[in-house]
Amino acid sequence: MRVLVTGGGGYIGSHAVRALQNAGHAPIVLDNLVHGHRDLVEQVLQAPLVVAQLGDSQQLQAILTHQHIEAVLHFAAYTTVGESVADPASYYRNNLGDTMVLLEAMVREGQCRNRPPMPLVFSSTCATYGHPEQMPIPEDCPQQPINPYGRSKWMVEILIRDWAAAYGLPAVILRYFNAAGADPAGDLGEDHTPETHLIPRVLHTIGGKRPGPLMIYGDDYPTPDGTCLRDYTHVADLAHAHVLALEAIYRPAAGHRPSLLTYNLGTGQGHSVREVIAAAEAVTGCPLQVSVAPRRPGDPPVLVAATDKAKQELGWSPRLSQLSTMVRHAWVWHQRRHGCRRTS
Ligand SMILES: NC(=O)c1ccc[n+]([C@@H]2O[C@H](COP(=O)([O-])OP(=O)(O)OC[C@H]3O[C@@H](n4cnc5c(N)ncnc54)[C@H](O)[C@@H]3O)[C@@H](O)[C@H]2O)c1
Image (cartoon, rainbow, N blue to C red; front, side, top):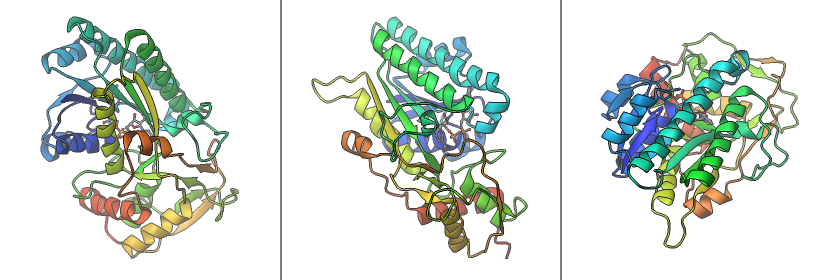
């Protein structure tokens, strides 16, 4: 299958490109390279790269037509909560506005080919749940996002639902929790500037790439060690789920033509900030200096996915998502990419 991967130069998208290649599909990357990496797409993955803004409708339509695209994995988005609070307009323009251009182009392309629109797999997030009413969080938990990033993703989910109902868009919405780790081969991984995710921040501090101490935001939460619990999933496991989702919507079982499917992607197990730090100290063999700061507004104490639906319907189970494995793979990557070295 010829698959357009928007945001395929970024962290999760680049791993999805590899998973598609391994499954015998032909991914084509569209990325504006604002946060993506040309070298990973062209040299490591050796995949075709179109450097473009998703919202450029003419260029997008030309790609869908001339590259004979059969499905889209849509990762392209701005992803930093704090930035979205400071500049919501850029988040709604990029995440919502550009996605609407994509959806319109997919419908138009279907009409030109005299077919229903091609399938879409969309990267959504647990941030659409806000402060969830249930834990672990099932897919039908009310969505009440509490920041512009989460709201932009939730609004895209609403667009997709309306497009599925009105235009027959086949779509899978995947709500990730915390992506972590790096490809086991060590040649793909996370490279964000600025880096806001916990595991790379811990490893960069241990590896001398950022000054210590590492801040722990709140150690008085109602959790076993007082720090927040998050559901970390290996990025290669997430990537594999996209291949399964694509196949589920592209070749549905006989007599069953779903139009819209929604799944959480997580492990169902939470790890605290202190557990992540301990895992990184064990993997690297280095102690980490930490300092406790007050809680950040908007951080729920626990975010853990209910995972039964993806398991039962997609046949997806995470295989590499043990905390020590994720941290080990991330450490190999950060040593190679950023020159992180043990500092003590
Ligand atoms: N990383 C996580 O833990 C996590 C958790 C939940 C959801 N997600 C979602 O997964 C997706 C991928 O996240 P990531 O961590 O890989 O982010 P990332 O920033 O590494 O990748 C996003 C890519 O999209 C590109 N891009 C952004 N806007 C674009 C646009 N308008 N046109 C073209 N290219 C554009 C960027 O250059 C970047 O390469 C995002 O949609 C994010 O909301 C991520």
